[in-house]
Length: 118
Image (cartoon, rainbow, N blue to C red; front, side, top):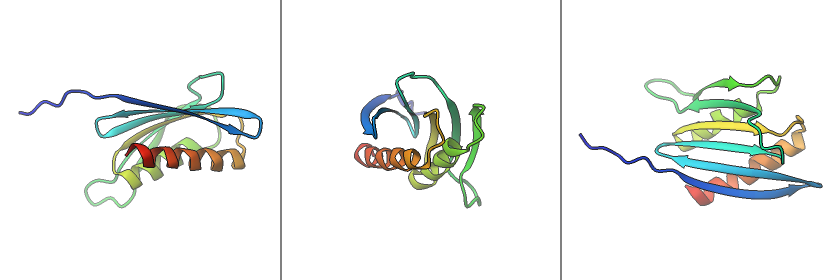
């Protein structure tokens, strides 16, 4: 049996949206990623996880692990990333406002960041 040593790489970035700083942290693990995106409060807002399709499935499976928000932004983002990169994604968003423009900005910056990491 071949053992694989755990490997964790941490990537961080900060981007300005209008007058607010948005913080990004990506923890790259063996065949999975944990992504936290938020503001200065640095809390786990909501968290979702998605796994890529396996067997005869055609779409990724995703669920909310914790959170009380009515939006499903983290779950949908995790699902899209799991489909695209074929690995498990944990996504936590602490953006405190369901602003669609902010979410588009966040997704674009995250996509750019992942292109450089993977």
